[in-house]
Structures are given as C-alpha cells and as structure tokens.
Length: 93
Image 1 (spheres, rainbow, N blue to C red):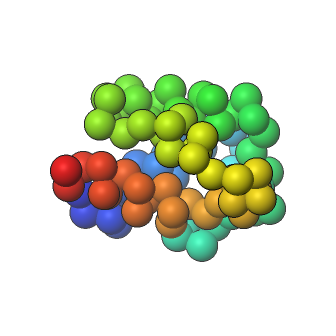
Image 2 (tube, rainbow, N blue to C red):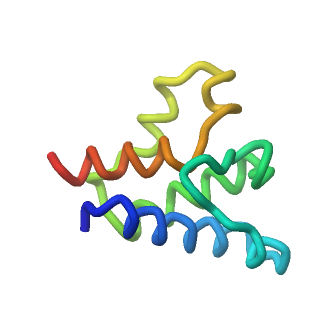
C-alpha cells in the first residue's frame, strides 16, 4: 500500500484513534492539516501515533528517527502531508 490517498486515510484514522475525542470525527484531516495548530496533538499523542504507525507498517516506518532529525520549529510546523510523504517513501524502498 504505497498510494498516498490510502496512506492519508490510514494516518487520518490513526490520528482519530490517538486523539479519541468526539470533536476529531468532524475534522477534515488532509495533506495540509497541521499537527500542532489544527489537531493540537500533545507530545504523548505523538508517541501513541508512532506506536500505531509501527503496528500498521512495522519497522519500515521509523517515525521517531524521522522526527529526531528535525529542528523544534520543523516539528511544530509538521503537516500530515509530510508524514504521508515520509511513509510513502519508506514503503517504496
């Protein structure tokens, strides 16, 4: 599964699971959705998302390693589309 639309759907579902609140069901999660501004994900939710990503795609997706290569302002500005692109790139390898 390396189609970006499918990856986006999967990631959006994982985000909804991680947030686990009613309001997230009404949020349109797209490529330009910001983890910080739009979704207001907390650091603990990022950890949970990393665990979910690993459950779905295994060790092929090194989410923590990918994040660790970023500066703080890059992490704060992170968009869902960047994660989709990262996952797609990992799956193509």
